[in-house]
Image 1 (cartoon, rainbow, N blue to C red):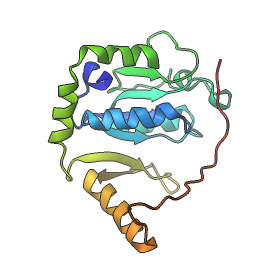
Image 2: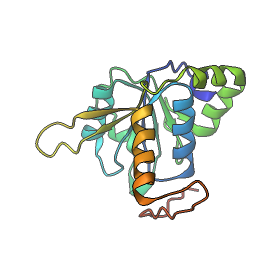
Image 3: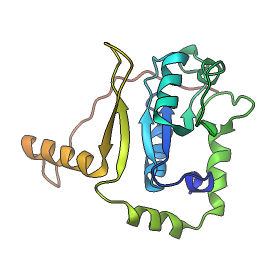
Image 4: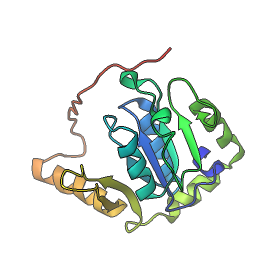
Length: 183
């Protein structure tokens, strides 16, 4: 509801520049439920790299953190022209002038009727874009690979079939993790 309250329309891009924290998952589920497209940004990127992805993807919203590995991500973007960016939301850390805290962003969703989210989810199809994953840009500028909801579900279904995963199975998803907390 917060993304809808913020004006996100189906097909709009939202970049997430954050480590693996629970808010990342909530943001993705929320923006995609509103019909948005997630553009993940590598936490090791510097301002010029992230700025390129933000501009190239035409992201309207940036969801990020401040202070991860000592980085001030919003400040890294200060000298970049981000022609499409309308809003920056800070999941964790200090909130700079012009940005919005995660808590304030979520509170804005109280003004949106839950039925609007249901209608947006019901309108999604397998052909709608779910995410844009950028290449590393090793041999040139990064290029965006566009994935649809149908592609993502089919990829998981195919993987589950190959390994023999059944409905009642459980599996471990180990992630390389570095603790991240900002008081």
